[in-house]
Length: 102
Image 1 (cartoon, rainbow, N blue to C red):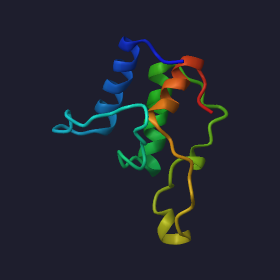
Image 2 (spheres, rainbow, N blue to C red):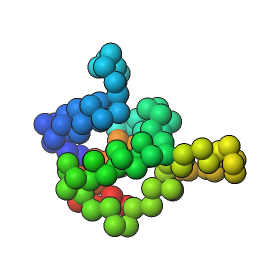
Image 3 (cartoon, helix red, strand yellow):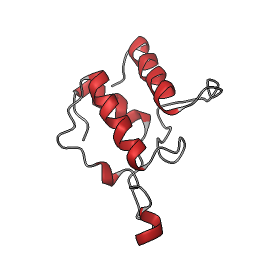
């Protein structure tokens, strides 16, 4: 199941405004774009983004474990990089459709 085109474009615009800076308007985003691997969102920035996303799109985060998807700040220096699940725009789309981010 996918969002209608207008809502999907709203999601992409939100991602661009919150993650990408000016001059990055031409970055191509799609459902397979990884927030951490492709856009560099990690640590505190990931926390802030997910909270803003939740508020904007009225998505429940109560069962979402952010550490499963995003590296915490400076963790790789202290403990080595841990394998994380890939978190893509598709996960955000599914969260909007269901009202829950899992």
